[in-house]
Image (cartoon, rainbow, N blue to C red; front, top):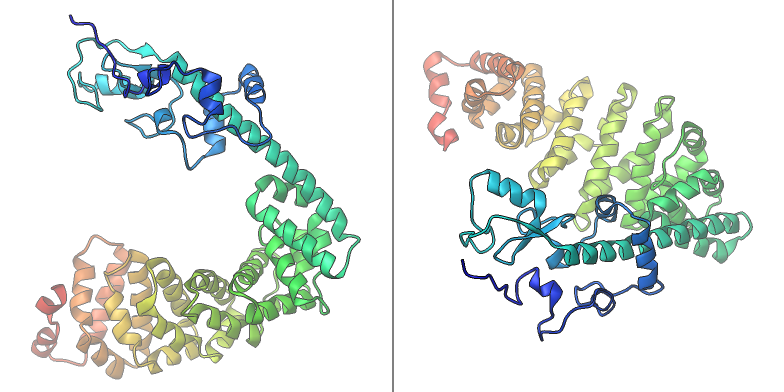
Length: 454
């Protein structure tokens, strides 16, 4: 059997020797950034070595770091995940032990990367690569821990600062704290644990400046709020400020205000009258319809759905013209937002004013028919429910319009599909309702099955 001589380009050999034939020292490889991971500022290789000596779990470090960019030589060609137990084949290629053994167990006796036949199926632990991976991840892990401790300390300092300062100094402290909590989970925990929620909440009120309000809301929406904090934020003056920012703030402030209000609505003792504001609903519809900033559509619709879940608020939602606005918006929405919008319209169809508004909207029937069997089963369910409501309200007018829009053929498709039996039953009932205005021959001719299926 010929002696295998690994190429300098191969994974394992590349760790023992650089491109010019020099042996790579472990310290030098990391320090000089040979693997794309130069030592970060403030962290020495000695520090990294100290971490290694502590025998940190490599698996734990890989999971906790969740790094976007990892040196390719650390990545197993099979799983495309960082290797934790690298082994080298006779071809010179290196893999994660469990992955290559699984490859062998499936009856493959080739190298997955080169597809060469193996003249020796033994695997050799690549200790050099293992120690290099361990050192690299330890260095990153140490830096993460150091930064975590730093941001926790800084968050604590900023909370104390906010208790003392006013004016522009307060705004600057809030801005810095906003940036920290948005980026670091450890800082968010520190703010909550050290009473920061109460401190920041106390800054919201009828005389709060727009600058302070925007930053305070941006911080609070990132935090875990307990019942006491939520009840405190549901004071009319604080809600009024959030509504003002929803109407007048930047797009980020609008979205943060929307999300914070929805977070407050999750509290079991929430009082619906807190959000029974015409100004709040108008601001929400503006956010949902904003053509330039589409990232506000989903949070806007999500809050509107939460509001509509309270029966006493549905008439108010209908009164601001939400129904025709949402119907006209449907064709431009992505699937997730579309489902939210249909859920809202279906909920509003449960009250008389909602039914009338849907019937009077020119494109309700055509849009609903178009959505049947097109997006998801949930969307089909909502669309069917809305069509049932308007057709039941005005059988002659709406049923005829629905059949002309191709509803009958779509209903046949639902009935013949493998979807929920409840949808099939509702489709059968709607089909029967629509057929009452026609003779059998005329109804069948209006089904337009071929065209609809195409």
